Image 1 (cartoon, rainbow, N blue to C red):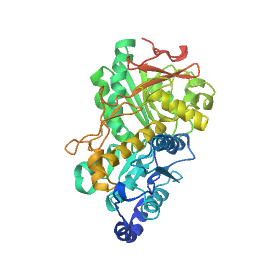
Image 2: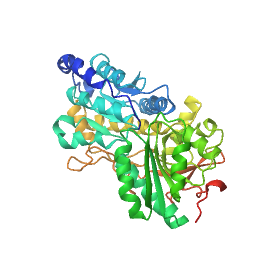
Image 3: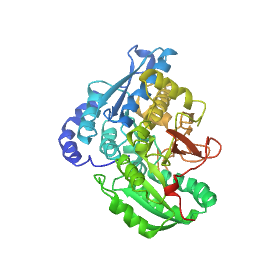
Image 4: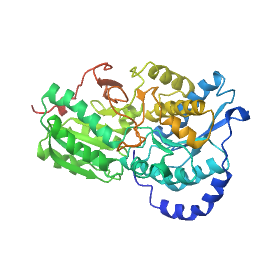
Length: 419
C-alpha cells in the first residue's frame, strides 16, 4: 500500500526483456514424487520496514509448521528472502534471480502497489505464481481480468482498495452514523497508486451510508507539516476525517494531537497497524483507528492468536499485517501444490483459484476470471471482512465488527465532534 518507486521500472523491463526468453527456457516443473529437494518459495519484501520485515517472518512460521508435519510428500518448504529496498528495480532483479537461479515455485512479494505492478508482467513472462501480502491497488487485478491467459499467474492476497473503501464505509455506517449520529466527512488521503481507487470508493460509498463529503484533500506522501491541511478541513467543520494514509502516519497523528484538532479521524492509517505505533507517536495515537485484517488481540479465526503468539515467540515482537497474510499465503501455495501434485505453474494457478482456506485473516477465497477483480481477495462477512481497531491506552482495541469486537469507540475529549 504505498508510493513512489515505479519511476525506473520501464527501463528495467526493457533491458530485462533480453533475458526473459532464456529464463523461461530454463524453467522446469518437477512432479512432487520425483525429487527430495526442498520446494522453494521466494519472499520479496521491504525488510527494513516494520511491515516489510513481517512478511518473511510470517512466511517462515508457516514453513516451519508445514515442515514439522513432514513437508509436502516429504519435501521441505524453504523460504528464500530478498530485500527489495522498497524499489521496483531491485524487486524485478530479485524476481528474475528467484526464478532463474534459485528455482522457486512461487513468489510472495511486497506491500507496495507500485512494486507489485512492476512485477506482474514478469510473473506473466516467466509463468511464475505471484501473490502480494499487502498491496492494495485495484490496478493489480485489472490485467488479470483483461487478459486472463497471459496474466493469470498473479494473485491479490490483500483486500483491494475498492474492498477497503467498502469496509471503511460499512464500519462507518455502524459506528459513526448509527452509533454517533455523524453526518459529514472530509476525505484526507496521500497521493499514491492505492489511494486513487480508494478515494473513488470513498466518494461513492460514504454518501450512501449517510456521510456527506465536505472536502477531499490529496497530499504528497512527503508532507511534513499538516497544519494547513488540518486548518482547511477544520474550516469545513466536518464531523469526521476519513483517511487513506500509508507512507505517512506518525507525523499527522502527532500534529493532530498536539494541535488538538477538534475532529475525530477514521479510515485507514497503515502505520497505525504497526505494534510500535503507540511508542512511535509517544502516545499521540490515543483514539486513532484504522481498518486492518487482523490484530494480535482478537480471534478473527481460531488461527489468528496462535500465529501472533508464535511470531512473538520467534521474533520477540508482534506481527505487522503482512505477517498474517504471508503466513496464510504459504499455506495457500503449498495446499495448491499438494492438490496439483506438482509445481507446474499452470496446475498451481488452477488449484490456487479453488482456494477456500480459513487463514488468520478470515476465510480466504479469490474472485473468478469473470469477476471485475479477478484473483482479488473476496470481501464479505463469509470471507475476509476486515476489522477496525482503535488505539486506546497503548493497545489496539477492536471496535468493529461486533462479533469480534473487544471494546467500543472512544475519542479523546479534544476530538469529539460537535454533535
